Length: 554
Image (tube, rainbow, N blue to C red; front, side, top):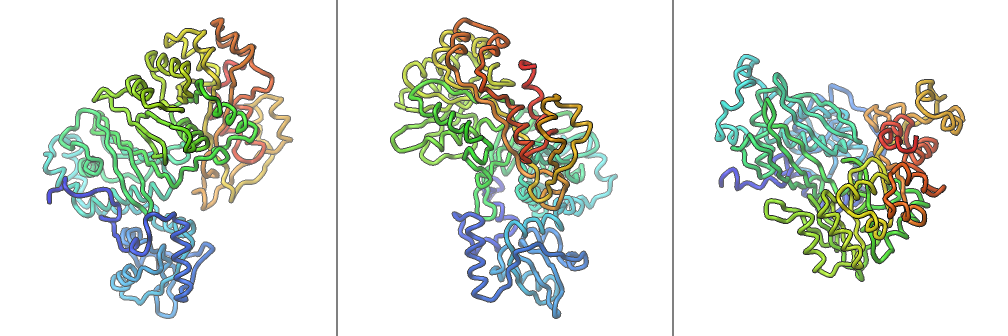
């Protein structure tokens, strides 16, 4: 079997499969844990419901790579036995391996999944960097010649190095750490003297301990092999996909490479459906706004646009909208670039520009499929906008996205694409603009007197609504001492009706249309400030997320 014939889709294939043998892949983690605990109770295996402490000497008994691979943490020495906290205490093979490696009989104990994951991160969170150090065993002098002459590596050499077991484990551990830390994107970036690795967590990039520079060709080569890319081609951008299974759930990873001065830069977007909550409450949409969205989604035809910059959660909101209105009496078709998550019962079409399948051409074909509702991933050009509008005129409900700073600017963007204002006015039903801000960690949030630097950054009328107190996250183990855990949306919904529809038809400018907004309209900033007062987020997060969307209203 050749290297390319190997199946890279199972993360556990290379990093150890034993811990998965007692689990059913189709179950959720909570369901798996409940089933394991039930059996553990029958066998008299102790189960931890609260965090535990482990000393450094006990932790040092097990190699980090082994601990992550087998999903165990040694937490105590008791009665001449090594006590193991295990993701799956029914996994006797993992326990036996630890007993052989340490020469100490082991006692298996279970632990709640979230607590175990935090314990593993706490003690082995830099496992990948430690393994990279071991892999880097060559002297700096050995690596100097390679740092500035990456083309010295032949394709066969990179392929061979990328399939070394330790290198395989290094890449796997990077992915494991990223998944465990709720990372959305992994950035691997080559520079002149170093190779950096950064995780985007809750919208903010965090630097990770870097692997040695001379591992760059093998590390990036391994990622490209897993993603089905051409490793011989290093001078043009490439896109690929990794499908893997981790802890019983399927995870897709979109991989993008681009050539830079010092090698290929890689970004891996982690699409973990188990972390996706497709409901309005989880997204942070208030009940009143939900009712308005329901009214818009119930319309038989028209266009509903979701606007915001890249990474603001537009696609997730549209997915939640489709999930909310889906039933067997409606045919829903989407065309996306790419399809990020599979939705049950909905026809999803991926754009393939190389084969002539664009948003515009795909939309034309979709209309011959007798749909009731169509989701267009993005309106990028005048042709797509024209087809979408004509589709709405012929009795279809169209959902799509635009890249604009706020809701009202979307109207001008459609006109700039060449669409007649009267057509925009006739089919446009609603504009939902959004941003994402970080949630305050529920485990360490507290109220403090409003600092002067915050008071000076917001309007006096906003200061008065806080009563001199603001919510902050102090930082704890649950949030990696950041004070934040998870994200929440800030929204503004503009319904097109009455004076505003007439202003659009007359070709009014955005500033003039702002005068026609209903008194009930609330901006993203106002929505965010409400969330800050409630203790869901912080004032600095609201300002960071919405500062580009307020100019028209100032």
